[in-house]
Length: 384
Ligand code: PMP
Image (cartoon, rainbow, N blue to C red; front, side, top):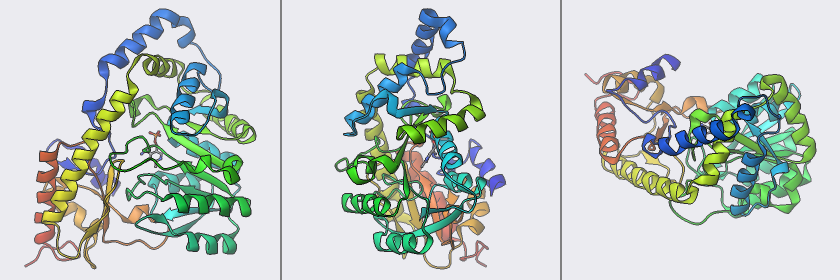
């Protein structure tokens, strides 16, 4: 599949595969000015080694972002990481022993599964419905496996786009507190809401505040190429994570952190987020409309209120992994659902990202996909 996905970057392919921010949203001039500013004003500092915890001004700016999301936070609560991906790795390495059980939503973020497997944790999938993790199932699996950790993407999940309602967030918090379990709340998409009201972060629930590690990222707000993320955790967890991070890269890039801090101080971030929400909302609607018009009867799909992903289920019997080469031949790409499952996979699922294409391209891409599905049998072979 890695080989197939490499083909998705060919220019003639309309790819719903990657979770790429819309390039039109990159503020190239603003970011260039931020780099120029820090090089001019403090060149010898930003080209030097720096502290593992991260740039104080950047941590302040992130703390303000979180406080705005109704999670009181100070700079000292945060460890800056090289993307949220590194935050995931350092906390897994710091908190898990081989064979420790980690519960995950089924399906879940593919690269989180890779992290947990790389530290030899035992990953146990928890069933989900259209609202995310099913609380009853979580309760039963906690009793059965005594897990060390539950990993969740509660808001605009990758890959499904689902959002966990407030009552389930409260239940997760209570279950973790009663069972001495870490909660990892991965929230790279929370600011990208284009419908509905913001929900409380699980990290804001009192019972589990000390056992929740919140991950965030500048990838979807500024630029993923800067590789800046963070984790917010108790002092003990942060210290353990900092030791692991030191072993990996000593600290995240000094100049990139300084430029991000300068950018956040000078720019109208609210305005930029508002623009992103509008753009992604339009693109999401374009995809949902096109799916409704073209997918075979019996298909279903998620209707996200934010983020970048729609999760599609084709009628029983379709195998999206087997269909991918035919889709690529039609110059359209997606990610088959199978690798997102920690347990038995539903092979008729696929993930489509709407963020990187204007509506007209989205419509064209879905038409190409529909043409592939129309001409195929369930196993990807051409109908005779
Ligand atoms: N968590 C989730 C759920 C993601 O979707 C992603 C990005 N695809 C990440 C973490 C990693 O993000 P970053 O670019 O900050 O490393």
